[in-house]
Image (cartoon, rainbow, N blue to C red; front, top):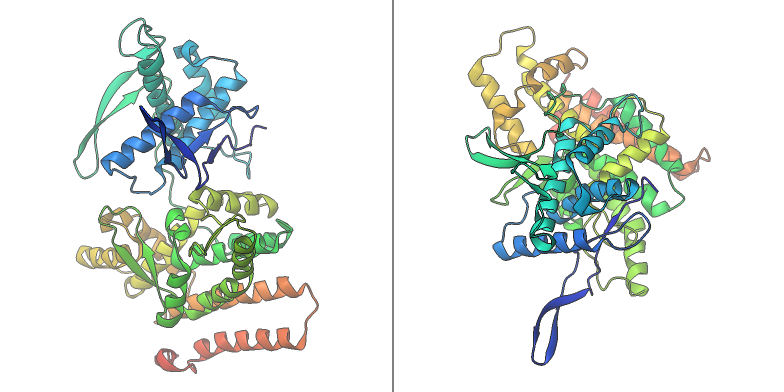
Length: 464
């Protein structure tokens, strides 16, 4: 019950009251609006009303979140408040400062699902959760409790808050609500890219993670894309089938940068050895799922996104996190393992490749800026200098890997091929047919061609 998701999205056919006329109520189609439930399954109407109003206000002002998932993010955050209120048997109008402190301590005490030695969430995330609850309580007071002092800045309010001011890294001023129970943001931890051994364990855990063949295959290729392109979770979820087909032809995958207000996309080089298995997934498991859903009337047409849930909807960024967390737990990985660590790994490798000529030398500032600018174009970072912390990680990486000119291409080809071999071994489950052995040999030759400099096309330039 404690891990049960307390929110869902309305269906595509959902109709809600828009307004009334002399002829009667006027309904409006409202698909994909969040609905929040109490732990016992009843709809939590006040929170749901607030979320719907927030969603309507955003649509009216055309201020959709840059992350593209504000409604679902709000629902995910506020559902933790709903769970606390239910477990503590507290009515919204009886919330107090003491309850805020108690809730903050509970959030801080929860442990990571895959590693009980680590906290489940950092103080920054706790602040986001609690400030979302403050926003709801302010709305709740204005909507239902105009003559009570539930929350505010005045002495005597049950929940007393203050208005704080801050400034972004680019100098933009902003303000936010604060409560004494909200912990101060912790100092960011060092960037920790996910290791090769951890990734291999995640792949190995897939076959034991579910009986559903489609979900197993989707999880495998989600890891593959995370590893190959270093995208953010939402960017990975928004990749389309057409994007993948074009990438196989051009060896450049178009990624829609979700943190850019101008909607600009970026192109990330990706070897065909990474894309070929994804094409096979599209033509087999995904195609069968879509055809079955259309036949059963669940969906009318192919949504076009690469990764779909079993009911045909595009998977969310939260789903990607949950899947990696689930695999990490099944793989008995004691270290932290999350989707963003794949991004750290990708950035580190890209920086390392471009630093190879300066190992054991002083790195000129203008060269460093050029390197980080090039990498930022691949990763979607606005400020190249925000990647400065990867310089040290890049030099560390070079001490482990060969510094020859072919390192990045060989590494991409070798790791892509390795993942294909692992998939092949899992699917055959030890019963090797002649065709499976042939595929394995072809894949091994694929790596050998690059290592020995005997490949065709561009690989011919990779001499020893």
